[in-house]
Length: 225
Ligand code: CA
Image 1: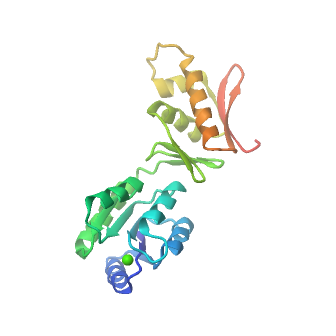
Image 2: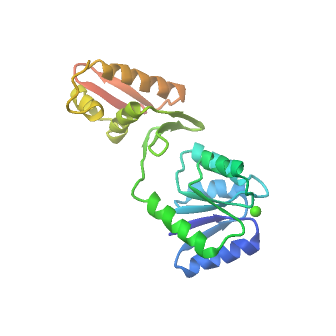
Image 3: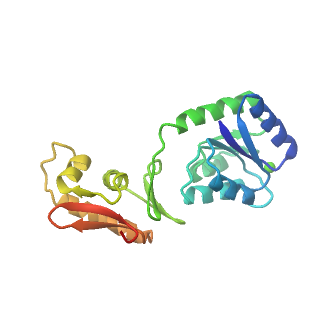
């Protein structure tokens, strides 16, 4: 595994780093939140260990910003705070797991391996222009903005984001989203295309737009193509 460890206490950071390296993992260490924000955007890690209490930007804020920008690397938060409310806050912002300090190294290792297994194989992040379709959160993300999608809207977006620039026929979209046995009103497709367009407009996506192709269907157009 390739890991990022964000921990400001040198002693804890060194113990954890050494332990992980001995297990054969690659470990980068950041001692502050600000550095970590950039580091995780520059390098693709398998799992991130994020301390809550950091001197500059705290862990919760770091995580919030990562998730807002579409980063979905599994994150395990380290916290000295035992209160349930704060653990919930971390999970709400997008932590995948947490461990209360002081912790047992074997426990940390087991949790990280579990996160790695869970994380790989379910990568569901598709990009079109300035918009990301985040499958884990079932949302459209653009810069700092995010808007959640209903299951049908998400299924429709999956088709478009999986075939950027291609014309998708009405029958293809109806089958993909409403199923082969759908016998309802085919105009439901236009209604949902309208919902998705509205959401793209609301997150201020400029580079991605769903265009109608007369007599055929629709395509997700990126930039000026
Ligand atoms: Ca700390």
